[in-house]
Image (tube, rainbow, N blue to C red):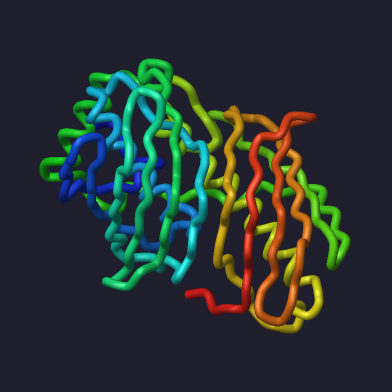
Length: 284
């Protein structure tokens, strides 16, 4: 397997794949290694990857889905190092244009994440990876699977030049690592490295938490956590070494929650938008 399925792969084994027309139910699991940075957004990545394996296999690996739209991501608990994620995805529709799906992740039998109303546009596989290699990886995952503990973690978001107006907005520059600086580009993707959309959402959530923590009445509420990310739109790819301008704007806030509008831009081009809700809570 060399270096494949190691640096940004969150399915150790696909344990179930049942198809019904253009739909399917697919299940699998992933062991979160000890001692690595594993942001909660990667639970959504695991669901998306599971759906992608089903979609790619259905289209005989001629196409692959990429991040596009997500209606909502609901966080119920955070993953702890050493836990095992049980992941499932329900494919509602899959064709050469797009895959539509929803899914869930569980930790120790308890619901940890829900991903609702997601759509991934399909693009030619050979732009991103060798179809024969992806087919072989799929057969490995459908068989004995791969050994857990391969993932080495991801770095904290490289945020710079923060400018904050408490109670209003916070902006920052996000420096995307160069190709040689971030192992996750090996999996995402071998022929066309792309900064993962889930890591972009993690950076925007990090800023959202910072702004809410500096804004009354949540400034005195103790630790905050991300509860919901909705209306996600990934509009374009971000290459290694790029720099993005991130902005979070506070929409409303009370003692129970804060709702924020978030945007990522590359110069004058909008790369991604979403809505994020944060609330008081504890982290593992």
